[in-house]
Image (cartoon, rainbow, N blue to C red; front, side):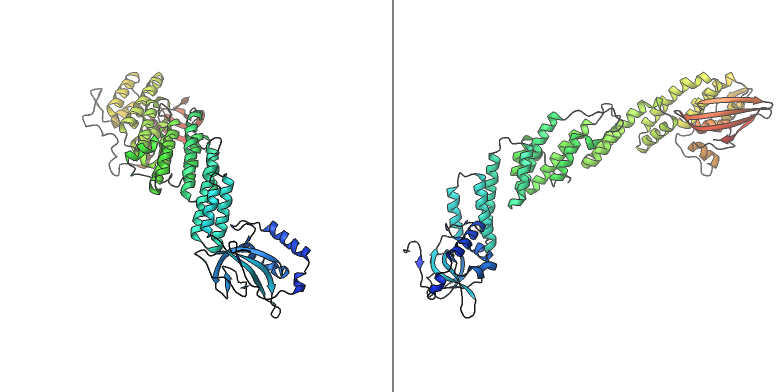
Length: 546
């Protein structure tokens, strides 16, 4: 071989003639196996890499006298000694060439041999050829495939990765990442259609190729942006007629869960986002995100979450705000930074319920009033009660005296309206001038009978919602206030406790009247209460509560 292609080196020792006549058939078989298992991927065409040669170590004893061309990096090269990197097999020759240039890559030709005395294996060097550095070879191969397909770039990246790991070469490993990125970019350019699914599949391959997570998030964000753009046009309108809305089946809420799972900043509140950043992201979310650093990306991820959550919640908001409580809960769940808006929706729902309180049951009215007062909405509470009483009065007036008494009791219990209750009782008194229940109620309200006429009280009416004086709230009064009927209550107290019954039956016998007061919630009987009236004594009381 001439000086341009390599250096011929004197043999370590004369090869025995018998060894040279070993079966060529066996050698050919071994070389064929090597060619199949360890194909050439180095810059020295026809030579196998040092790492593939080392992988054959368990078979070395059977490959004695087999010839090899090995390329790789050397650790030591002097006139007397050659040591290859990461290889403990001795390389021997009578005289080795002097190291040349900065490259540590060489091609070594020779054969596996065995010491006759010790039986130790060594590599008998016939020829050494100096090769370009791995980085030089890599650059040359990049130039030859400058317009190659993605597969070629991946193959070159695999070579650089394997080489970099074997020699612990960080620079080569970094170049491998660049090659993988190039291949991935070519794959993207070759896509027939840029769809969310295609981008998601490409982004999923980024970690396996050893590339930075920023690229994965970039393409994942772009995939979500495209999907969101399509979803806004195609999502069917939700059915708002149901009592409750199942967000788990809604496409926008499902997409919101995907965002929260995929983007690390989606669930983190971003209270310091500048208006300029919001406008920038809205103009072109994909470009803004791609050019942003990690900190700003987290903000943009939250902006996407907020945009989708706002649209999803708006879809389930009924025009009349009748589901304001549910909407408010969704705002607090997905947009806690907008809690004030959630509170507005809760107040709007109370306003809706108050305007439609006339048809509520007594218990539902009580719950509504309590909610209004808990939220410091006393005006809404009063509106709800007034509308409910107005409708109820229209119905109870048909019952004459009993109905008027019940209306008076309701106004007193719900509005603490003593003057209004007194006027209703006086109206009832005109229909039943001797009714003891009316006398009792008027007396409690402070009315006095003067010259046969009931005179209005002069004392200042009680302040609405004022607590009773300390110690004055007996157990019976507490039960009346809480709406819990008990035996020994008078009929008047029962009316104050539960209001008028939905139905009342009377059975008169000598000296007494037995009344059955029935209270219902819809078709369900809530209470069936027996009231005994002793006509000769003018007394009445509850004797049974069922």
